Every structure is written in C-alpha cells, then in structure tokens.
Image (cartoon, rainbow, N blue to C red; front, side, top):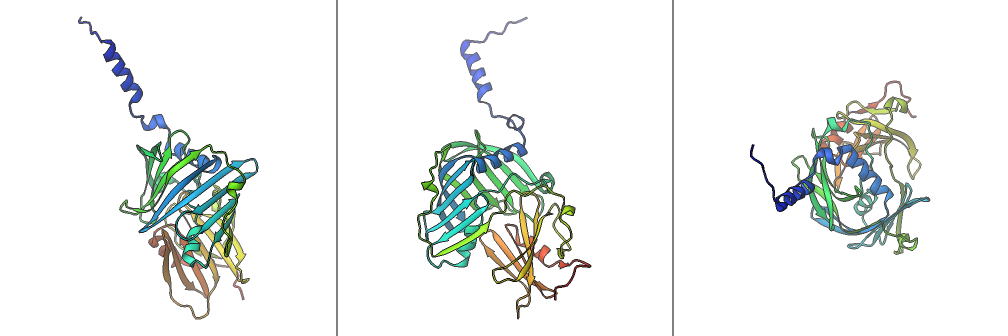
Length: 333
C-alpha cells in the first residue's frame, strides 16, 4: 500500500478551502428563515442610512432614521433631492409633510412604504405562487449580502430580488421585477449604520410643511381564514389564484361618503378594492399608474369601483371588471 504524504502547505490549503467554500442553501437555512430575519431586522433594528430610489428615469435620494425601543417604532424618512418632503412614522401612524403645493402623484408616492412590510402572511402558499431560491453573495453599502430571488409563476404578480445583510438579515437593496425579469423600480442603501444610537431630535421634522397628510400604515397581515371576516356587500367574482381576502372594512371619506374596503393578499403581493357611491356623469373605466402602483376605476350598478395595488395592470382589470353585489346584500337607498 502506497502511503500518501501531504505537506504542511497542502494541508493548510485544504483547510482554507473547507472554511472558505460557498455555503449551500442548507447551511444558510430556508427561504422562510431568511425572509423572517429580514422582517425582524427592518422593523426592530436601530439604523440610519442614505437610500437611492430608482423608478423609471426618476432617481430620488433619501435619508432614513429608524428606532425601535420599549415605546415602539419611530421612523423619519426625508428627501435629499427634489422638493423637500418628510415622512414621520410612529407605530402605524404616518404623517407626510410636503413643502409647497406638490402634485398628487408626488403625495401618493410618498404614502407608499419603501421598506417591505413583512413577515409574510401565510394566507396563500408562497411556494405555489412563486419560485424562490437563494442567489449569490454580493456587497452592498460595504456589507456582504445574500440575494433572495422570488419569481412569480403567473402574470398576476411581480417578481422581487432582495439583498439581505448576512449577519442581521437587514434589507440593503431590493428590486421589483417585471415578467421578463427587468427591474421596474429599485431601492438601495449607499451607506448604513446598523445599531446606531438614535436621539429624539433626529426623529423630529425640519421643514415647515404647507401640506400635511395623515394616514395609517397597513401593518403585517394576520394569517386569518377569510371565512372569519364575514360577508362583504361587494365581492369580485374572480381573483387570481393564491390571493385571499385578508381584511374587510367600512368607512367614510373626508366628505362623509360611505365606502367598503377589501384587501387581498397572496402573502407577498396585495391589492385593495374600494366600493363607493358612483360619481355623477362618470361612465366607463380607466387605468392610471403612479410609479409601480396601478389604479383601475370602473362603474357597476351605480357604484364606483377602485382597485389599487403594486401588481400588474392585468391583475387589477381581471378583478375590477368582475366585482358584483353579493346576493342578498342590502341595497343602500
């Protein structure tokens, strides 16, 4: 039998290769594990950083300051380019401060939350609606990240790509992807301080707003059975597979008009349906877009139907054109 002799240098090289080899998916944990880490990091870590947000040919630079403590979550997001704008968050209460009479499009874009609102609801089975896998490693803002690839299995939802910091799971970059895999919009930190000490003063606004909008953030969707939500007066006759009714509510607009709100989610994507009194003289339907958010408006049985969400236009039309009064539901006089 021939003895195999390894030099000290050969042994050292083999040990280094074993230590430095790329980790497998099993080493890194499941996709759910990574996404849950991201959810906790985005919401519970203290951090401050500078973000770049791309939407088509528009680029915005933003500063975010986020603190989570025993009193809850406080966050301040403000623009470093373009018109002065600030978003202040305390818990689920959000205030948008605008300097000057900025157009509605700007206001609507500000109310959309930039960071993903996770952990993912288990209303739908993500593995059935999406193809998900761990991607390569890549540096973002000077930190090592792991890429999560999420591709839809049909044309009714967008794809996503997340870059997660390996030690904490913090989201450092994200991309919303079209059906062909091309970025529709991207968000990336160019610098970030994790574990930052955030003072109260840093969370206070600096601009004197001429316009103030207040809203309530839709927090993590609970994993509830839609049968527990009761009957809605209006419902779509068709919904893309794996979307489930997550929330149902009634309310009044600023001018006192009643409306019904339905929120559907597949656990990652979501869209809202609003049903209210039809506007006088309004006929037909129309589509509008605000960045990656699309809005379908139509009229049926004297009611104005609005479907809005960060989903493809095909989803909104498919749902919006099928909304009808639930049999047996009372008619408002």
